[in-house]
Image 1 (cartoon, rainbow, N blue to C red):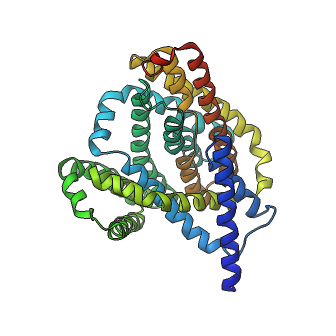
Image 2: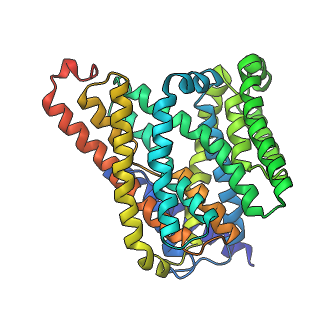
Length: 390
């Protein structure tokens, strides 16, 4: 492949992503749906299929999901994870029951194998932490009473995924039952061990990676993350979970510096990840699953709204805060795509990718819109000085 052609294609892709990112900012939406659309348009069966840059983009996409999970882990300290479990376990159990089961049921109704249905359950279960965090900041809801409840639910969802992803990876690998059991136990043990180590020696570990040199610190954290992710992948645990655990282990000032240094890399490779997922889906495969995706999206909106409403109610939040909490949880995004990508790579179910793409596109657009409607509704009925108290 001529190097000039590769650079031209990559340059065109990155500039196209920049245009989509600007458009998303101008209309107040997450760029995730636009990145997915770009992948559908320029992938197999799209308007202008990109062929020669596929291999490079695949590697970039893998780095993207690792960085997405690393940054997610950096958002939480081990103490926040354990405190969230202690204070909000009832809401977390409700979240799992209401939002995992619709995906599993839909998969079985569509005639999928149980493993594919389980993956769809993961897709419908987890909200997009990235979209939710951006909405909270953009709408000025950081100080609202419902916000800790929403964040607690997101923490618990991420912990569930830290166990769910390695289990899914082991089952997709088709290993023998005994080997699969050992891998699952190892994955769960790794999660528990990292949280325990972070609770006891988190500050010491963070001081070890901290550096006053931005270059040294960036390379240290990125290198450690890739090594741990690679080791996790070799153990059939999940590179994403390995990256998430690295993020949890880093805390305090080191985590703050790491977030600022890694954010640009996360944004770049995260965008490549969403585009690559779209590349793998033939747009012609979406219309046959569009109605199931929209129906599942309607159920997902309702179940997440009920989850947020009840969780906020149990926390003593008024009806306005409950309305905002429910709207925040509707969006699906990066984790849903990561789960579906596992199934797509393993070839477990041909329609999993198209259905997930349509589902995430729908809720990544409607979720922010619902939050803005909730914001307008609550602002009209509450005096300015009382807005952050309910």
